[in-house]
Amino acid sequence: MKASSTIVRTIHPHTPEQETLANAAQRLRNGQLVAFPTETVYGLGANALNADAVAAIYAAKGRPAANPIIVHVADVEAAKQLTRFWPHEADLLAEHFWPGPLTIVLPRSSQVPDIVTAGGPTVGIRVPGHPVALGLLQTAQIPLAAPSANASGEISPTCAEHVLRSLNGKIDLILDAGPTQVGLESTVVDLTTKPIRILRPGQITKADLERVIGGSVEAASSPATELRSPGMLPRHYAPRTAAECVPSETFEKRLNQLLNDGRRVGCLIIESSNAAARCQLVKSLPNRPADYAAGLYAALHELDRFHLDRILIEMPPAGDAWAAIHDRLRRATA
Ligand code: TXA
Ligand code: MG
Image: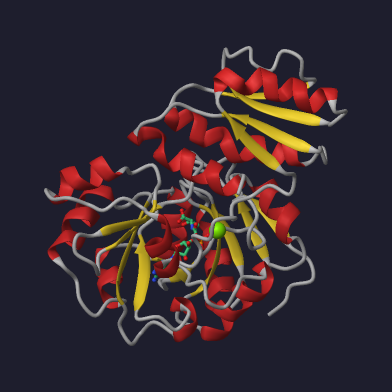
């Protein structure tokens, strides 16, 4: 279902216009591809119960067939229909974090087409918190398969312009509600293992999850995670420009080295740091994890557009609250 021209329609981020939602919902019911904002990043939605529509997502993104897609639903009842088994932890997590940036992985029911789960026995599900995403789900009355709305392997889109640049002509409609708030993809947690395990860190941290389930949660760890969650390949979420993450203490030295070699360098530093004084092209991000995350992808998208030789990124602080950011920076620089 390849679209030849992509329509962009603005929609109010807090009180989405019902007519715009109805139009987008009808397109989705007809098997079209619609990009929409969630609180994390923009998603590329298709009717999750229509295998052909989901196949069109893989085609538009150039997504490897082995990588399963998250299904978005309007509420817990709709989530249960997609699963074969609903454990107590799922109730606890749903009650605390939904609608919100948490994806839970559970055994899938026969309702879910193979293509959504890449043939696997589990399905990732979330109820998004963005009013446009929720309104769209409520209006369309179907579950929506939706990966991030970018060509496979690239940085996720945090505004409609990022989506358009990556997928123009390949999708039918983009709902433009301005920049997303969280800025990093949802935390993905696998409830089919004991202890339950984080497959992808996000704004909701390991400590947040442990507090709510009252037990221990395994942190995201490379080899096991990468097998269970094929999207978690080392190089992913990456700008086209070679990027490098450097501790504050050695940043200036590394920058000078590159500049002295005649390299064209862009820097991404932490606000009020003066590590990049010699650099012509500098973006800075706030020294608070939530604000840093909200601006990270837009900053990388912007630096990427200069076709530089190198993007030099100042390493943010350590700690649980920065874990998702470190995870994405590791992938961006792998
Ligand atoms: O915040 C988000 O999660 C955004 C918005 C649009 O909801 N979506 C998103 O989707 O980031 P995507 O496809 O770009 O990343 C989904 C990740 C991939 O790493 C995929 O492998 C993993 O979740 N995933 C999806 N279903 C899974 C499953 N059944 N088991 C294990 N991992 C799964
Ligand atoms: Mg993605």
